[in-house]
Image 1 (cartoon, rainbow, N blue to C red):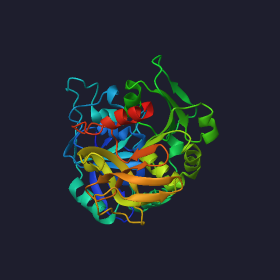
Image 2 (cartoon, rainbow, N blue to C red):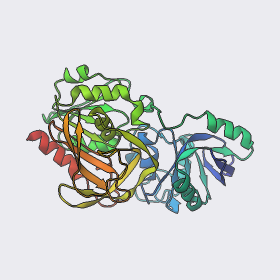
Image 3 (cartoon, helix red, strand yellow):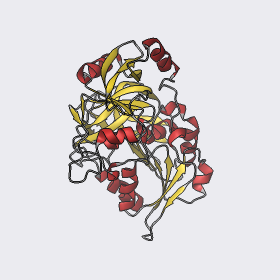
Image 4 (cartoon, rainbow, N blue to C red):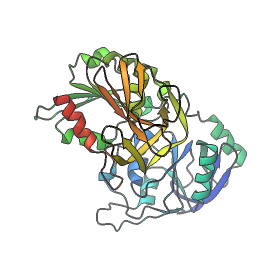
Length: 377
């Protein structure tokens, strides 16, 4: 079997990047091409359901240098369509490694490219925006590659939650008698589940098609809105469910869940040019004044009170919503986008980033404690 061969990445605007095929040799991968600035966590990234329908470009120079392990999985499978790297490695000599990164990608059927000029590729995406693309064997004519890319649906208006949601509810209850939290599972990460359960939460995960009446019939102490892939504007059926529980039980949303709660109370979302994906995003908590280094993975954001995409002030600006006042609580210091809000007249709050992720520091994990404390209060 061939270990490596020539392959290429083609973007929908016709830009081409050549490299060596690793991972699943000969397999094609088509999706939205995005980049991740994390220096580690590559296995967590590709197994995060939020990357469904996407090709990940890793900006760090070396990927795979500490191998893979089952403990690093964020779900039961790989969701990324393909992987692009400057230098991919197949080492498995780290103390906790159970296998090599490139071998594991091949076993999972995931195509990948190494030897790509990722700096040039990322600069192109930053200038032109995230776009569709595909990884193909060098023998495939570009005209056929372009046809496959054009057949891939755009991320705008795309519902990917149905592709990653469970078919049946999952009950994760312990004997501790903690608060009963019902999650709408649009692609929840395993580390979020772990953080909630470590704090005694009796967690139930429900398919994204669950209704508000079905959730309320379970008599929850709170409803949790998970992360996930796709365009929040395409999930009106989930938004309707959320509208049906807001004001009746506390609601907390992370990432896509933040966007869904915002849309449920009457706010709007928009697509970012190239998204926020990485482990080094500074966010200001307007309640404490602290700046936290956060891990992020999203391509959409919430508009400000006047429809603006940037919040120029550090003040906790307010929205008039269908459920009363919402107040800005978190602000991205890179591009001044909304990173979280608090509902002031009904119990509910959100964060756009991932407090469960540890990008080195664990600055934001305290938000899980804050959630539990507010439920107790």
